[in-house]
Structure formats: C-alpha cells, structure tokens
Length: 192
Image (tube, rainbow, N blue to C red; front, side, top):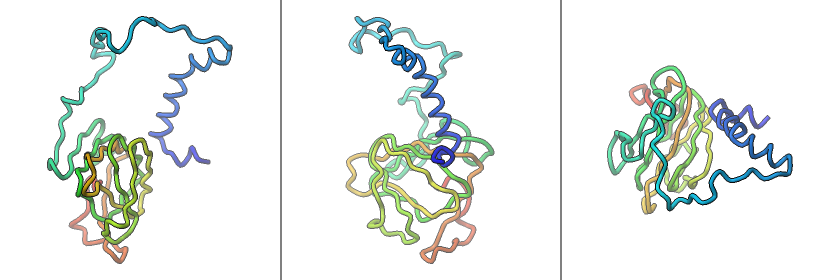
C-alpha cells in the first residue's frame, strides 16, 4: 500500500491535514459553505497580535541559526538531532555548484524541496550529468541502504533549500565508484 511507503512523518502530515480540513469538508458535505470569519480583513491590513509563545512557539526566518559553510552548504536543526535516537527535521541549503558524494544512510529519510532546484543522483559515479532536478514542491524518499548523492548544479539562480526528516541516529557510509563502501573514515553524521 502507498501509505506504508510514506513513513511516519508523511503520515503525520496527512493526518494533520485531514484534521485541519475536517470543518471545511463537513460544511462541503452538508452543501452549505462555511461563512468567512471576517471578510473585510485582507493581507494589506495590520497583523493581529503575536501568538502566545506557550501556545505557538515559532522562530522567524531571520532568527534561524544556519551552520556550515556559506557558499557551499548550511544546515539548521529544526527539531531533534540526526546523530541522536528519535525523529529529527533539518533544513539544508545547497548553494549552486556544490554536492555531496555518493553515499548511503542506515535508515529511510523523507525530504521536501522548499525552494530552488535540488539535483539528485543514484549513480555510484560522481558525475553531474547523472543528476536529476527535484524542483520546489517535490517530495522525495531516500530509502535506507540505497546509494544517492545530491546538491545544486552550478548556474542555478538560487540555492536549493530542503526539509529533511528521519529517525536517528543516522549512519552515513560513503560509496566508491565500484558500489562498495569506502573506508570507515567517511562514516557518521548527517551526510546529506
């Protein structure tokens, strides 16, 4: 079944969407449209009050703490930690012209392309001609134990930003052109 291949994070998103849409679906089912809350308020009007942090904790984009190498790749841990047991969510920003090398992870990971174009290959050979574009809005599953590598091609007009989720701890194994693991010096960590 397709749902079993999506994994827990994707199922949680689908369940949340179903719950959020329940009132609209109920109104639709009764053939009576849900009345607008305040039809006179538009995006041009002043915002309402800041949500209570104990109800809705949030971090504005300008306050996210990116780490890594600007101009190559940077990350932000949104929740959890890929190196620790449990679920995690990481933003990765791939700058044009930068890629990981062929590798595998011990577990499946779920990715959503937020912006830009994320280029992906399943080849054991590090050749940019083997990369395929995953554009903003694309959902991708990295199956555990399967070779892949990714990044952003030179000439892309903007970095590729992806949301990567999974269950830690992540073990990354670098793969040689022959499809065999490289020496263990290249193992551990997120591995993108």
